[in-house]
Image (cartoon, rainbow, N blue to C red):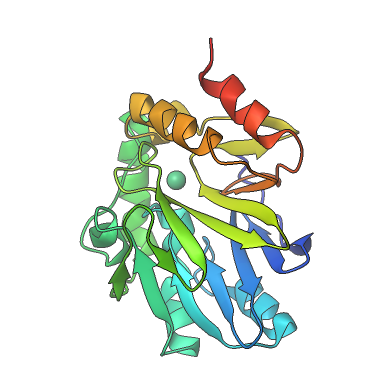
Length: 229
Ligand SMILES: [Zn+2]
């Protein structure tokens, strides 16, 4: 993964702001409020708060794709700024979000991350709601796509007849090439392939991964290429 911080708010789609800061977070705009997807790496959640301000609507909830630190580290700050923010995750990754467990990569990186996590001092945040496969929350449908972590979720948004999938780290898209996250970060590769097959059956116009760029063309074809021989 690219360690360079890309601090920019870019327009992904008319109603979706994509915030790139090591990992991607998103602000989804509705008529009277907005919904956040993932809380990013930055403990101060600076870019996310700026994007919310730009949208000009109060965030109602933050939907967490999975419990890796680079997707939840900004949570405490978001909650501090917006105390009524509803925190949503899967049941399986709940302990990580609440700071009761650290999801570490395999091998040496796991050792290194465990060491670094002492300094990160992740402040867990209470999960208010768990979503299951197929459940719809604020017009966004949760899809269980486990494999990267045990409880990874993807979120499906339908806007202007377009299907947009927030895929978390099920895939990454760097330099216009779709791939899996690095092996040491994946909990169960076989399960990832099952999850990829599952989402390839949904017609997707756009896929927004947790790292890298939006996939806007031939989305289903590119997903199928990942698990087909
Ligand atoms: Zn991850």
